[in-house]
Image 1: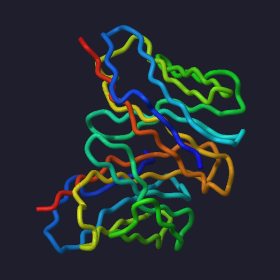
Image 2 (image 1 turned 30 degrees about the vertical axis):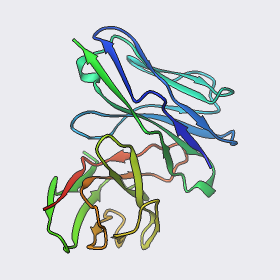
Image 3 (image 1 turned 135 degrees about the horizontal axis):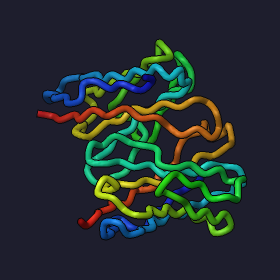
Image 4 (image 1 turned 90 degrees about the vertical axis):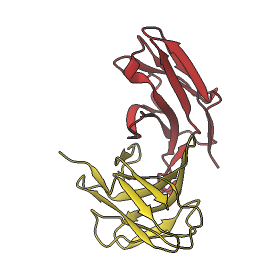
Amino acid sequence: AQTVTQSQPEMSVQEAETVTLSCTYDTSESDYYLFWYKQPPSRQMILVIRQEAYKQQNATENRFSVNFQKAAKSFSLKISDSQLGDAAMYFCAYRSASMDSNYQLIWGAGTKLIIKP
Amino acid sequence: DGGITQSPKYLFRKEGQNVTLSCEQNLNHDAMYWYRQDPGQGLRLIYYSQIVNDFQKGDIAEGYSVSREKKESFPLTVTSAQKNPTAFYLCASSPQGRGSGYTFGSGTRLTVV
């Protein structure tokens, strides 16, 4: 079974600086999708960024980018120019491309990001 | 705008009561999911449904029940058999496309009084 590990329970960064959140996963599959979700204090889950495993190019969404290392099974999230509004829990998730998985998301435990003004 | 609506935002339950949490989506998504989140914790899957009139248990289904009579609706009932129901409950939906992420509702905070 696939697993997702976020080894940093909490991270802090100074406003306007760059921070990287780590995520590793375990799978024997070659076709899958990876996601980062943000959960701010409002507790609404928001999709931040999505990566397709068969694409070598790292996904980017404005100040958010990923470093996808397929061989190392690593999927880190980089937030540039951190803003106070980036303070949230960040969850990494894996979704198999296999129909046998029912396409469910497998979730990491989350990393709490604190932004220091 | 399309989205998922969860209601109520806050719900209080007395000991021994059943309560139902509502989840409605107008995204035309086939799949719907219920998650439980405890303070400082990640998401745990309660139930999911991929098509109308069909649903499967997730990791922590005991003490919960669901129905899927319409594509748009996936209500969750927290029964008196659930001994520790105080938590935050999130509903999500997704299309059946392989690479689709989930769209989430804003959640319901359930407290036992």
